[in-house]
Amino acid sequence: MSEAKLDRLRAQAAEIGAVDENFIRVLSQVPGYTEALLDSLTRSHVDGAVDHKLKEIIRIMLARQAGDPYFGTLRSKPAAAAGLTEEMIEAGCGDFENDERFSSKEKWALRYAKLMYTEPKSVDAAFYDEGKSHYSEAEIMEIGTFIAFHYGMQVFTRAIGLKVAE
Amino acid sequence: MTEDQIDDGIDHYETSEKISGPERAALRYSDMMANAPEKIGSTIYAELAEHYSESQIVELGAFIGFNIGYHTFFGSLDFYPMFTPDGRLVDQDESRRIYGDNPVSHLDGAVQRSAAPDEAAE
Image 1 (tube, each protein chain N blue to C red):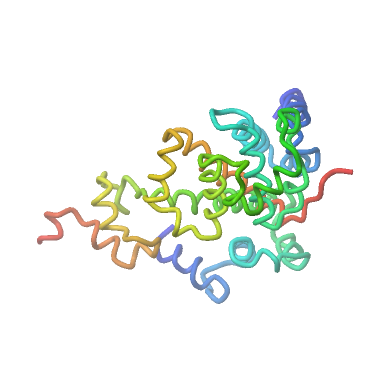
Image 2: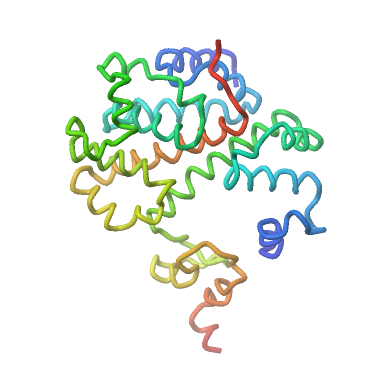
């Protein structure tokens, strides 16, 4: 990958804040992966039809499940600018089912993330049917692939013991 | 690569003589990432470093993480391969019948079940 392309990805990552230089440095060891993985991390997080703030809560919830301090520590700047607070992140990662600040739609998405790797058998046809009452199929795929991709990368960063850059 | 080798690499990688030292280290790393991430430490990385460069270890780790994330998601969607083990295009009901509800060895019935109906009747 060219230096110019890497610089563009670096700038994009810095703008969002959910990936820092340390992850880029690690990925740079496998040039064929760098662009694809960084671009996917960013796009799945900030693009699409599903609310970015909700995805940010999901991302942090998953990092905690994965036991990954790296992604669990970083925060999205656009989500913060849009009003997402640490209090709401804690609420979303906690007892969101009984929290009136979350809509039924948001609760379904948070439940989806919570159950995917803790009780995958419960993410069944009935669960998806309920999801379809809140989201289009495309939105459900957007949330599902977001969960799968970010959790996978969190499992990886946990395994290598990655820390946030000083 | 054969189905026998795939099964051996999944079920007996620690003891199989068909698995090389570098392969055993990579399979152990994958197993630990999926099933015992808390046990991953300097020992496993020292072992991997005997066989692989740092960039190859990063490649392995990212590949494994990606697969851990996606396989559970795909499993929740309850869809099946479009093709039989020998490459015949089948619909989802037929594929489910061939592969079964849980991912197991293709040698555990899927290959036999995937025989085209006329072949199976013979």
